[in-house]
Image (cartoon, rainbow, N blue to C red):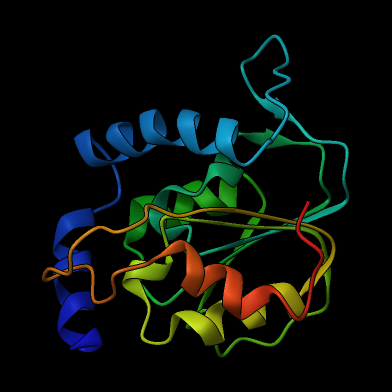
Length: 174
């Protein structure tokens, strides 16, 4: 089921540019607000972050990290293979792209770990959440659509209890 969903996901993104990328950038404005990412832009419209290392789990070809300046280490982990335009875009911004599943990768800890609109798309939401938290030494920021029905690209119905029950023993939620 997950492998089939990944095929649909790849078709949706296409080459990672054009209308799909623009649509994603628009959604990201809402994600950032809900994730409490301070939207402090410089004169060129880039998001200024005051941390050293940021990891985006599931950022695909149009990660929010493409909007950021400041961190010395920017990394995107996503199982989707990228095409030329997306690979060049990440390279030009100094962003490392790792084609790996969110529950399987092993990296050092990051100051911030971001995850948005991801859990419906993964093979094991609990494993991805736990791995994300394991890689966080500072702030874990998450935005997920809740109670969305399952379809060809969304293999899980994500609920608040699923998220809260998974992380409740590991973190204090304020």
